[in-house]
Image (cartoon, rainbow, N blue to C red; front, side):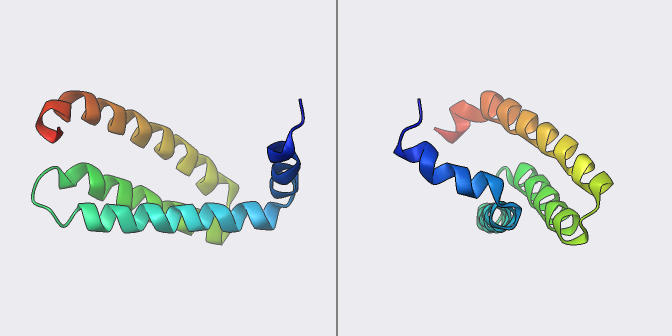
Length: 95
């Protein structure tokens, strides 16, 4: 089933430079959210970890190193797990 969204998405997936620029834009958004969120006094440790991983991602992308990219992929999986655990443990305090 190839709808209009798939037709729009295919050129983005096939063009590495576009995909990389989109990833960098998302990483900058992640850095901005982590910086704004870490201004508060509560629960800023998780946000600072996310900030460190996002900055590492920028280094990995700019250096074009495959080993740094793989390390970032592992760190990203760990931070997603950390975010899920953090949300489960502190959801009562947040809401």
